[in-house]
Image (cartoon, rainbow, N blue to C red; front, top):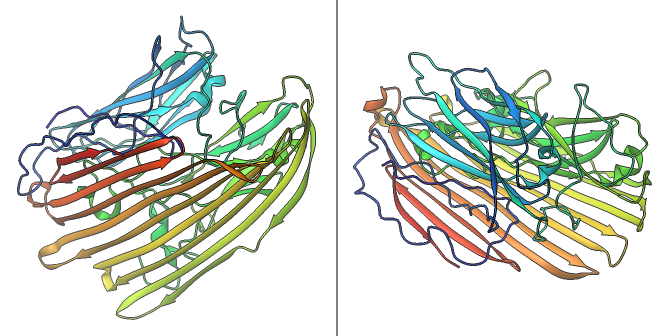
Length: 542
């Protein structure tokens, strides 16, 4: 089953009109009675990255074989013959691995800027190949100059875990100006590509250009590392008898502070990696949402621009609420995107409003033959400020409201382990100046509903549904001018015999994904189904 399938991921707000790639039903081989030694290459229902027609230039950024935790280091040189302004830049990573290997987490840095974060599929003994594409046009400032390259997919290769991860990363450049399209979720600026892309120094310090008129921080936040924070949504208070405990329970919130003052809050996406929920057979072909292209959390820091524009260094720190003190497990690299006022050397401004609601975080443990932890959490933040630009005073107001509810149930010995959880992250950004006030509202909802049971003869079964949803509405002067609705739903049911060699697991499993996005910019709808590692359906249409 070595038919080549390209895996593509796209930011949730992007709408596509026109024909759908792979819209006809898949022509697959007969479905075996159980998983064999090979299966279909990884594939996702997410839409491909759209590419302009015409001339393009390609640069190879990295080629590496990861067998340990030694980073690949090299150099990047901008393309010759495609200028220094591009309508789009597309990153593509091609990977292959065979044998036996866990899922691994990786990153790619250019000049210290993280432009890509990923995880890997788990291979078949015969080997798999996969590809991921990402629109990285927003990093054009970094890409215009030569840069040091660092890439790492940390790996362990020994007598048991034999899979060497072989990857190649390229960038393809399309000359021209970036086209105006649906705006980035949670933002309301008409220029999607920033003038500068900055990183923090080793002391988490930022020195911003003095003429910054808009500032956005992006944080590639991942709970990982093999410990309990990889499954943070399943942790329980220390009073409860469970293998993963935290001081207060599973509520997590990624915060960013400027000079010690809370500047942004966000709900982390509950990413499930390809070994998640004790059942790799759920993920061999169709990964969970975002698993191979990890999207950064975005925070609009424009209300703080007046403070950050003073030419002095400022502290910008990221922390994760709920992580037990002194415990690691979260990675939170930060990029800072800056839009500058070309007609002013210094843009002044002021923070005018800063309201922080009380953080509610309550987990209640109820003992019994079926243990139970019920969690409720929420938090609210409003910040506002203005900048005096060459085109007048511009006021920016950011509201963000987070909420989380979950019920975690398990039996003694964790032979049954179940979670039902929902996270909401509701954000609005209003920009008032130079015309009617413009508001972008993004209502994100993440969901997880799953149960793992270990039954007779050590048959382990996992039934799981994951949801990644967002509704984005743009308005001007109180009138809606654009909207989109995303619904990316994964469902899986897989069973195997635990605690036996790989060839004795007798695994069976059905997985599916439906990715739907529609709105004022068009529509896209694609569904995939697999049975025992065979792709049995690939269907789409609006």
